[in-house]
Image 1 (cartoon, rainbow, N blue to C red):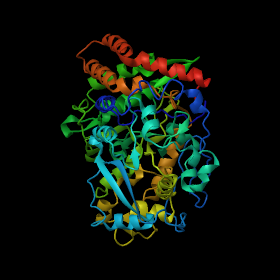
Image 2: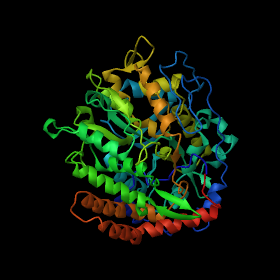
Image 3: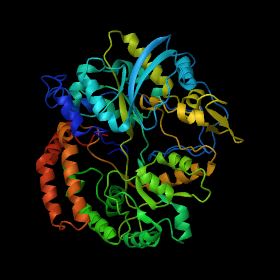
Image 4: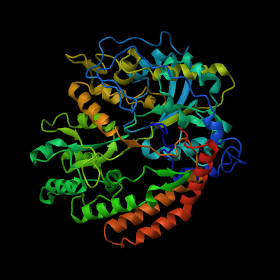
Amino acid sequence: MSAFTFQRRSLLAGAGGAALLAGTGALSGCSTGAGPDTNTAAKNTAVTLPTYVQFTGIKPDLPGSDKGVDPAFRNFPKDRPKVVPEKPGNGETLTGMGNIYYAVPPGPDRNSYWAGLNERLGIDLDLQMVGNADYTQKFATTIAGNDLPDMLQMQVVANFPALLEKRFTRLDEFLSGDAIKEYPNLANIPTRHWKPAVYNGGIYGIPIPRGAVGAYSFIREDLFDAAGLSPEPKSFAELTETAKALTDPKKRRWAFGMWGQVRNYLTMMNGAPTGWREEGGKLTHQYETEEYKQAITDLTELWKAGVLHPDAFSDQLPFKNLFNAGTVAINATDGYPGWTQYILDNASNPNFKLGLMPVYQREGGELAAWHQGSGYYSITALKKQDSPDKIKLILRVLNWLAAPFGTEEYLYRLYGEEGVDHTVNADGDPVLTKTGTANTVIPIRYMADSPYTIYQPGRPEDADTQHAYQTKVLEKSITNPTVGLFSNTHATKNATIDKTFNDGVQQIIQGRDPFSKLDELIKAWRTGGGDGMRAEYEEQLQQAGGQPG
């Protein structure tokens, strides 16, 4: 199996969104997909993916690796080549919709950054920006309606292959094989990231790439230093002692925040699979393994030791804020792009020191196998158009938005206009102004994006820290064998059965139910949909003649 196989997750899709879609009639006549002979693993693995043509115009200070380590830059390149010689458009209007994690910025009539973006793209970009918490509902109602935007950040929902086939453009003729060379910045997206865009034997979207590392184990290294602790506890016993040393309820300080983050860390420590484990064509889910049971046993011990925040089981726990405040010392598994936000959030705290903690095997000595990330955030699908020229226009725009790190286009896309949206420090690094911080958050990065690059403005040492961490943890890593496969049972039932299962696990960890209840939860998970997912995935694995990769 390739070192890079990524899980096709139901990204932000919830049961409500799936149910809404199922009742719209938009996919009438479809049940488990686009038809039994359309979305098959055999057809999908036969798709000619886009030819990968790596951008070599700028050399990183620290190169990436074939194990998935991202390239790193200590400073922003001084030479910033222009890689899109002509404006993609000629005054046309394009519509799009994506999620946003920040306050919605002003429109182009009051936002010089947005106006400048439109000028560079040669279009009038009409972009709906939907708060992340509301995106599932908005996506469902948008699909149910008759007026799709030209570009849409997708969610994997019920009958997803049929949805793509009915409402969105199949892009093979534009992107498959060498055809993608017409859009060189899209061709710079490595082959592995395109697999989540393949359905029905074709390419149905542009992937928003993410790195193999997926998550970091963030620590407040200043708190570790103050307590004289090693940032690398090399066994569960050492982790427990470290957590106890960091915890002081009288000072409102605990080692860990959200329980789910700690569970994910412990599943790696105990050698549980990420998602599913495949052996001889048969799949075993993480929940069904002895390694997972040991992880829950260990988490119960940590809870009894009082080293988790008292509100660790609350979905509303502001774990990032607590980490910034020093109330929590370890965010055990958080998305790796969070490095930048933590640095920005603590810019005024001279004592703040951000660090990263590897995961070692439970009994000590060796590093645990790292659970790779999915490799993508979402895919952007293009609604069906009457004219191929409109599709080509959209692809030219997405090509501009995917310009690589260090280019003139990338600089504007992330940092806007010098002197307005950003200033430049003595080392040539762009630093966002207050205006730029507010104006540049337009979610164009969820329409198209370049491969991830390690870089932190004004902090060259961060490139070395993150690159070394990725190199270390990705030396031995595992992936999910169901990557590249679609389960309609997963899309329709997983959110519900997973919540029920995890609600029950929380009761066990907190001592409200006996550990023996875990077997009942596993049985309910299987009958509620787990076995259905397994059967659908195993059938596709058999069709593909093994793991797709």
